[in-house]
Image (cartoon, rainbow, N blue to C red; front, side, top):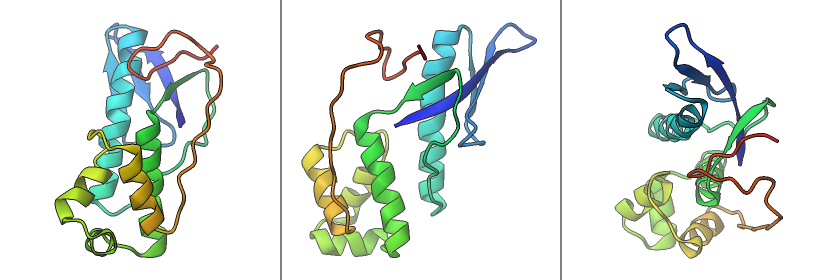
Length: 151
């Protein structure tokens, strides 16, 4: 999943980053590269806040010169959360369907927790969705913790 970011040099010499699809995700960095890495953290923080507030996480729609790519597991977690909201499925109900303890559901929804593909598949299936994966050639070989520059 690729979120567009706006990157501009601020008056104090740092680079300000905003995320059009997640207005609450605002951060900065000393360099453009650092700002992009900070953008991933800001996006993850915004997602965790939306989950805590029981709000949907908007899918990326904005286009732009700069962007950051989220890890596939985070994409699956976003899909799971939005599916749960759409189905009216709370955390406790998902836990019952999966015969999990509530902390397991909390972990599978935590964007900073490394969930396995099988765990995400099970959770999405219980929410009425299927996980599919596609692989394609990389657009840019230079990767920095999930951030890529636009070509």
